[in-house]
Image 1 (tube, rainbow, N blue to C red):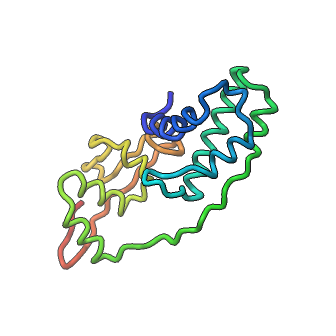
Image 2: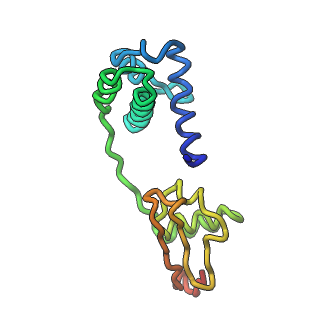
Image 3: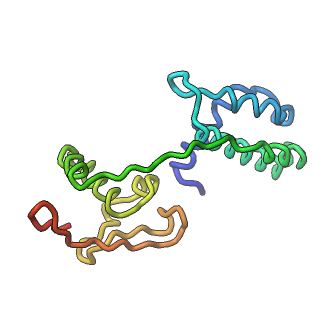
Length: 174
């Protein structure tokens, strides 16, 4: 019942874990997992950010909770895994594009990339929600973008109005 995106994320984070621990899941201990998380490296061998480490930690905790539910590991082991502290996550300052910068980005983009970037810039959708959208979710007659519950992170339906906007001396009819 999971989305393809979620399955890809689980696979990406748990395959390296499975390779590192080619043994019975019950023999994996919290100190070994802490060491594994500390040693995680990116594609080019650089250490992962705190956010990426925490994402991996959460997937591992989910794996052990699933294993506990299936009775593959004792409850105590799953609880100990859940107590592994989250790494420090660096704060990131969110940048804001100026209208000129965004105009240059949209002008340089082509085809469906241009539409995707415009929706991303103006509709406030999450990246995963953008990837789940289909052309039939855009309703020009209603001047709205429809995010059905099965495509929204919050599993609740959202309707985003498409406004007529004035930009760079011309009317943009979205």
